[in-house]
Length: 395
Image (cartoon, rainbow, N blue to C red; front, side):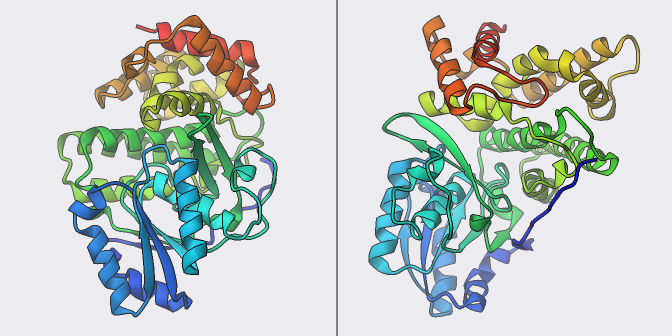
């Protein structure tokens, strides 16, 4: 195993009706004015936004609101939030929503403590030295942004989708009521479950030493998410399944499932960022559309891990060569994605791409990665193009 440092400062308030406590929680920290940041009309229609605002009113906490965050949060929306917070003298940002809202809130929190343009962080031109506190009322189990140091923003002028990681914007608290996810459409729930799986796999398929305990945690999380995903497919109002998925989402992206590993892969995520940045597809769906083609391209370079995954997670019989077992594991996970009505090719996303479009995706991804990407197998531009092409031509 490798040395590691684990930092998980976020206070978690988990369970039924916990969102009713948000005013009291914020008051405990002494914040007097907050930005309540949220997504589309669902927060209004469900009554959640009114409930949150009432909780703030009851504690005498002033607030301003800004809604409209979309599935792939944009730089222009973040800039709106930045200007509003500066004008209103906001002391913290409260994200009411899923990963997109939380990521936008993090971008705003960086910018309020920085004199330059917030895109500098995502473009790799600057490092944050300070950030305004962020709190969360979670409505979607998917990104794990409520416990992670990650934030992803799309520059809606250039269509670049870029991430920035800093512990400064790890949320101070996360209110996590699984009941709030019950109104989600089946497709959005499935996308979230697959994003959780992929966050775990990005830490699992790596070269070098690992920890048996960390592997067991990752494998247990994967098996749990897969089993509970199928329950939610058939019984979307199952509270216990919702709770399992919500907790798994947080644990999948707070680094717990990668402790003691020498590296992270995140190639599938980086490949997908270019797709959703240009074509605005759902992130979880973009991941499942690409993963199988990535896996078939890299598995020989990371064969022991793929073989272990097939045996420990996908329950593939230990029959035949390691290569045969690994390939069956890849096929089994793709079959699972399909069972949730998730795409396993780029065409299933409804995209019509030319060869030049695929090469553009590869060039953009290579440029962002400074040519080299991944751990299971280091990818360069020609490798990225091959994966995109395979994902598009897959039938």
